[in-house]
Length: 352
Image (tube, rainbow, N blue to C red; front, side, top):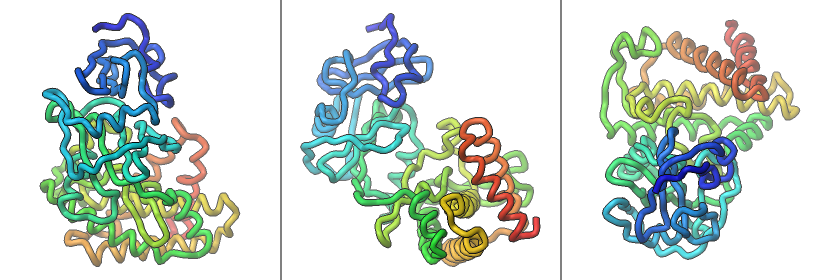
């Protein structure tokens, strides 16, 4: 049925203000706790137990009911596990997409909008390669064969976000963890390479020296914040790619070097967080340098295609920092200290 009134109340809580004046056409999937609303921004996903009158919340049972369902002619599961699950609780962290913890064993993430998902493609490649450093994949819920509605992955409790654990480690002078992250990154790229290869032409290469270089699927938004840590275990998350790019752009094949550079820059940024929290600058600078070297050495020792010049690497690092500064100036001014501090670190350490 067509709705002539705003449907912001059907959006996730953190998006209701943004979508408050949005109107659209409601479609309820018969026999399922699920609806979508056609809006100018996309097909809004709505878990619901009352035919789209309201949005179900964690604890209402919509996520459990959806997981237990066999789907329908319109909506199908791709399952990698089918364990019965019974309870729901909210995931109380900042999220782009709303997530629900199921039985303290799995997380069901509702997409904000039903769309093609590069993250689902990458998750299935990692699952097929038995990549162990990401939460285990339980299933994907599709509308038709291409539009992702929800995903279910293993719940890994008691982890710390990378902006916490990496900054703390750098502030304490610890850098050995970077070798582990470098090795994990190489294995991740090997798994994602199963999605196909290409090469840059002279219009698509991010640096002149990369024309003709090998491309593949990469993480696309790779930084320490995407690496959860539990003691000595590390888990890579969030494979949606660059949040400032479209879904189709994030499907484009790119050089794995972009992930390597992005992670290397984020190690510097984590060091800036440590300094902001009171760590001594000279000591953190030294630890950043050791961590970046350990990360890069471990990556190159474990990756089959890891040859690149220091000039190309430095060019891409500069690009990342300038983008970070531009992004922070426009969207996140409180973050400006990190990329600006990174530029000063690079000038001090590399003489640039």
